[in-house]
Image 1 (cartoon, helix red, strand yellow):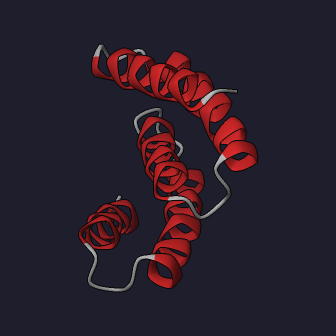
Image 2 (cartoon, rainbow, N blue to C red):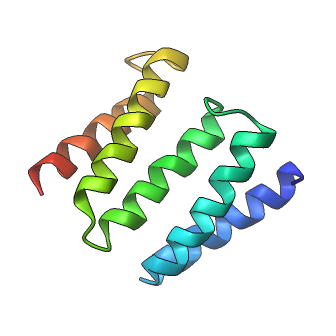
Image 3 (cartoon, rainbow, N blue to C red):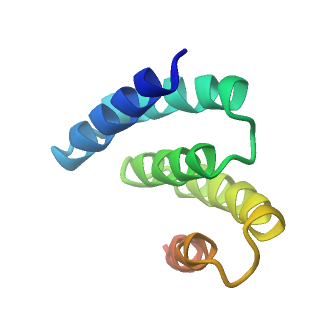
Length: 102
């Protein structure tokens, strides 16, 4: 998939999630994530952002354990690629802390 197509899918998934259509958003985020892994790589910042948003869509459907696992995978990649103090890493740490409390 072309990077512009991935951006469009990602933006659509965000819009759908914003409307509370979490199952549909999850499908779009999964589609985008698989394509990004192939095109951009598993540790590209865009791929990690999609993984983060997929975790939120999963969490919003009440699947907390699955969301926590996605966030843990994302956090490990962010720490190694972006560093422990990068803003994206810190966002994931906060999301993971919230997921663990649920």
